[in-house]
Length: 384
Image (cartoon, rainbow, N blue to C red; front, top):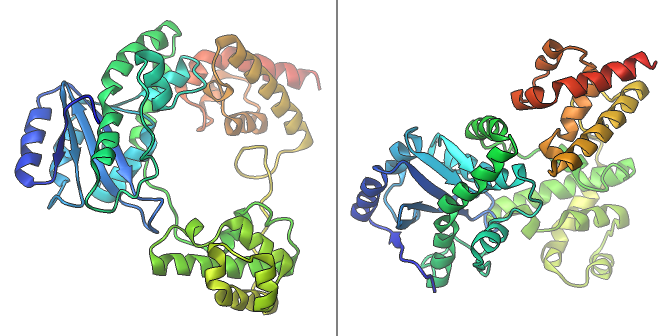
């Protein structure tokens, strides 16, 4: 049972009343629940908003529309506080076209102050000694009616965000990382949903696919295509039709009849479609379609693989990055990401202007680390 009051908004009049109350504030806290664990194409199933001492749970499945929230989300005089904002921002943009901003992300702020455990549950317990329940974390949020327990769980996710922001921002300021947060928040505002259409050749991204012989890859490609079609037909996420590891195993063992299939998988969800899987294996064995090219590792960067010389510089820069992160008491990615190090190793910038020409680098990284990075690079080059 929630220890605070909130309103579950399912009617237009209550929606409009809530928006009116929230529109006069200078900040609101936002979270959503999605149904990605239960459907092929996920949707925003709940929108939670807290402002001041008012807490609301808007239900897009029962309301005639939630587009009336647009002015609230897009009003730049109102700060939006989120935790792990990328999912919320991209989901709301995907479903409703909302362009949310400005934002403050408490997860990123916690990382900037050096915390390695920064889930909302961890932060709320650390700062308020309150344990958030995660009982309904994997609920099917698309089913109506929702239970009181589910609504309590959803509402709780925005209650503490405003207080958390005040506590975190002071520590981040002391560490001199406010410029980092400002830039990263702007990047997050501009994020968009990036799920690309299904491509059977994406089988090559599955763990173990690269090590399969050609015939095994042909089979895996057919199995992945069948899984996607079954998932679409049943409105399920693909992993609920069959796990990728099971498809790789079928590609290795290649059962050709029901008895052989049952010997490999005597039970489990994959057995439901054994006839379909067997047909896919048979098609794969006889397929003559060109295989996907194996993905080459490039040390985390984009484009062509690194040369041996570049790899040596990559390792040197990564060592510097790790030591710098240890000195600052933050995780390594809060100094430089691995892809950023790879780009530095490839481009070998020796001046600030050259650093600024590398798109993957943020301005705060150049401001904080330009001098030591250039020193490491030039020293490496001069050493031959």
